Image (tube, rainbow, N blue to C red; front, top):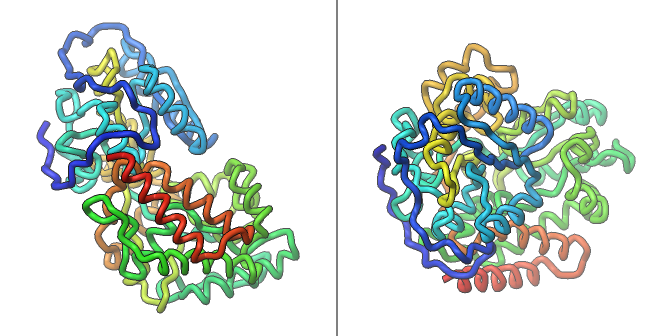
Length: 435
């Protein structure tokens, strides 16, 4: 296949967040020798009960169409998925097919852990969106095919809003002040049982906040690209959410962060607003039994065009460079990306498909949540800016660092400015050590 070129800085390899110490061999290529061979592929992904059941359905459909290929499932949860994958990869025991996140494309691909899909004749990219295709490239190789695109939004649980008798704000004009006031009203009506808003404290939250202030988490050449005063204002806002009771106490938030969706505050209809990706709408409505309304990010001045939102590849389909069955792995990935049968099962839960034919084929049978996601992504298009730079090698665990410093602030162990200073210094060290 032919892949579009993507000009990016070639990051140097070295020690980083994942233990990929023995990957020096080149990627495999398909030889055609496996066409009729009975093979077994291990397939790893992260998800919840809803997504796991859906994925098992697509595996069954693939195996029915390809009786010579058996798929062994290795589902996991986000919190432990990457540690397990790093350990298995370093031990030369990586799954054949891997659900990959953009922040790790450089980490794994750059260290030779992923198969260059551009060398696999069984993969057709002719119908895939070129920008989405390019998002899975590093150093001229195609290390992943995007499962679809999505956006990071505030999910508003209408059941919680109605119980609190609080109207859902106009997300095309709302400010952070209105967000805070709305959340505080819900918390007040909840009388210590329900809360207005969860804390948004991962990498996407910080990226959106920085972009609203004309800055970025990373620069195009792989360095940090923000002032500590701006990062401090991010943690100052989270602290204000706590102090105004717009969000739960720190102890409740800590417990909630370790819960699965089904046991979480949002999943059990105890919080009105929380940050999620658009592809998660179906899961959220299924779990809560409530109608969920997607809202644009609040902005400083109430301008949707300045809210810092962006389109992101939901995740990627990747393959291990050490797979003994690269042709079969490529056949499975091609099925996931291009098969109408797979599209009809996966729908938009891993993002709106980047295959134009798949989008067209599933449109007549879209569930209400799927239709809503497709329409929402189209509606926000006029206000979407360019995507932020891809996280560099060494940045794979930055999200965990952000959450750790959020705890430091919410537990009053550090001031927002001290947290920002320490965060920047720590991340700079992580990126430097990866060179």
